[in-house]
Image (cartoon, rainbow, N blue to C red; front, top):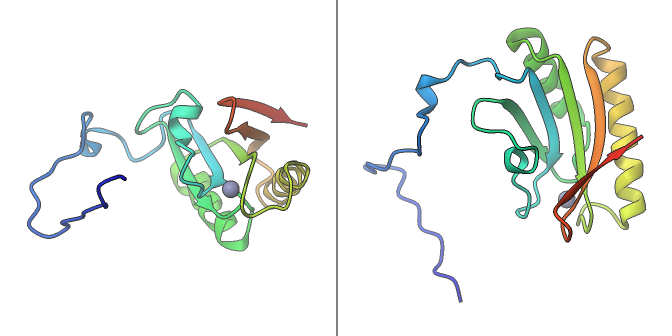
Length: 138
Ligand SMILES: [Zn+2]
């Protein structure tokens, strides 16, 4: 069994691994905003081959373009210059009944982002958690 997670937010001297966030610009280097699921098995930056500072990442159950996700994406676009968005669902998602439903959910979210933020280039994908592969959804 794993050691239980321990967090010491106050009085901790731990630092984050390099590069320190303060050394990075506030605007994402890849001008990218990603909407994906909160699933603990997903590492959004790693699965896209990105690093700290490259993209905004918005997460919720099922990678759904809810009003709040769209609000964050709008701020990402208008205040911090992102030009491209990706909606990434994944196989075996607890927020969807089946993998087919995941794909339909990605399509619906892509459509909602496009309708709300027409200046963004929006793409959809499904991450296969077994294979570790990202498949485009068209
Ligand atoms: Zn999920």
